[in-house]
Structure formats: structure tokens, C-alpha cells
Length: 247
Image (cartoon, rainbow, N blue to C red; front, top):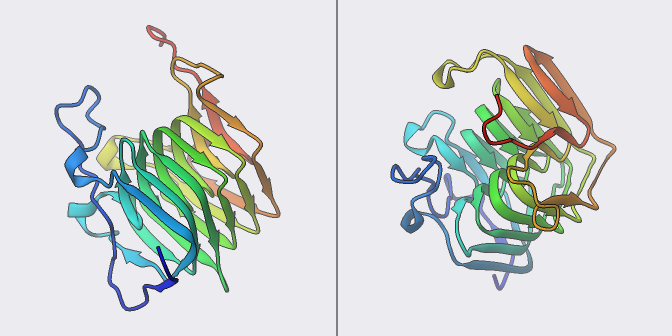
């Protein structure tokens, strides 16, 4: 990026699309050709007034953000996002909807007043909606309000994280509010997993040298949760390891 950009005049500007690959083992891997797999270097410029509302668009049900999905080998780095309002159904992030085998580095959220990121089903985060096997490093979020969906799995920095490198990230002067409850479409009777950094950190086949959360902080922020749900934390709502063969 060679200059600051004001997106006020653009309706739902989204780079790439997240479509689940039906041939993948778990059915959640993205179709590579539709996602963003290049390198975006903001060169420390500012992108302002990002406005996206796909909360009723079932063609874009998953992966809502400036980048819908960043996939293998992709990088988003060195950019300041200011004055955003982003709303979608699932995997909603201000910058990246779904991060898969990629890197998000030195991405900052700030606002002249407040940023807003909202999901209507599950997974919302200021920077990233959902993450798998990826790095989220050196990112800062301030003056941002997250409205989490009944399904939860949301945080101020990121939504649900699976096998992350989450390092040197901060959250300050932010809020997260959620009324947890059932999500019939996904067969969920109640919501769960709300945190200041991220809703959950899943560490299957845990290797502390490879996947970890390190040197992160949340300050001067407020989390308000009501309804039917569980697992709420100031940093992370849930942090666990799935053991093969365990119930």
C-alpha cells in the first residue's frame, strides 16, 4: 500500500471469499483458489471507514472482513485500520474473516470514536474471526466494540483460534457484549467461549514449541455476558487440548 485509503464510498469491500472445501478431511479447509494467498503489506498506512454488512447474505455466510479468507502462505501485515463497522453471520473479523495457515502481523485497530464488529451466529473478533494453524503477532486493538452472537466463540482480538501462534498482542479500551443462547442452524443449545483476547485456544496435539500464546495483554476493557452459556475469561474463554479417543 502506497497511501492511506478511505473506503467510505465502497459497499461491502471484501478481498477473496471463504468457501469450505467439501473434499477436505474436516470440511472446513478453504477452497484455495477463492481465498487470498498473496502478501499484503500496508507499509504502515491507514485504511479507514471500512463498512461491511453481510448479516443477511447467505452467499457470504462464512468469512466476513476486509479479507474474507487468507490461506496457505498468505500474509497481511503493517496496516492500521480505523473507524470500521463490520457485521456478518459467522467468522467475522475486522481485517480477516478466516485465517488458515497464514500470518497476520502488525495489524492495529484504532478509531476516532469507536470500531464495531458483530456476528449474528458465531465467531467474532476485532482483527480475526477464526484462525487455524496461523500466526497472529504484534497486533493491537483499541477503541473497539465486539457484539458476539448467541453461539459465542468470540473475543476482542480474535474469535476462535485453533493451533495459533498468538504473541505480542494487546487489547485496550474495548468492550465485548454477548447474549449467549441457542443457534438452531448448528444444533447448538447454548453458547460458549468468550474472552478478552480470543474466545478459545484449541491446542490439538499440543506442542508448546510450535503453538502457543505469549506476551499478550488486555487492559481497561469490559466483557458483559448474559443468556445461556459458559466459559468466559478476561484473556481466553477456554484453552484446552483434545485427546484422541477421549469423550
